[in-house]
Image (cartoon, rainbow, N blue to C red; front, side, top):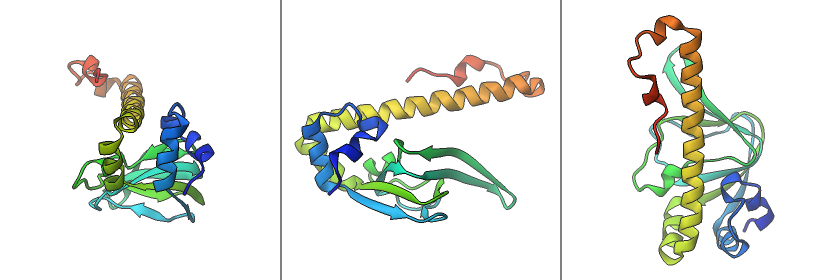
Length: 168
């Protein structure tokens, strides 16, 4: 069981009513991971949803033997692994603790069961997931636009820059 106060520290859950957080708190587990702990890797089945209480987790992809790209460094208040809410999902990136981390975990299959019996919980959680997804996409679009501004040779090959910031 996890404290409601800890759940409120998660950005996507900050506006969820306490009675709904109580449901989540009964199902969630608090885990402590050491630095360099790999939570999952590319190709692994994603069945767990992660909520960061403390620490930092890098989401990364290996492009070649010499090149790793860090997609994001997640810190307190962030969540990841929402693909656990989609049956059969596999990881498209690797998640590694950059320092000791406190992470709340929820099994995706159990969350789906809870959503079936409590539509209000499903609404609040999925609204949070959608908001986080939009913020992430906006951040990536800004990064791409900045890269194009700093590299005019790349920018000249892009036919429609407005396509980089679609509305979802």
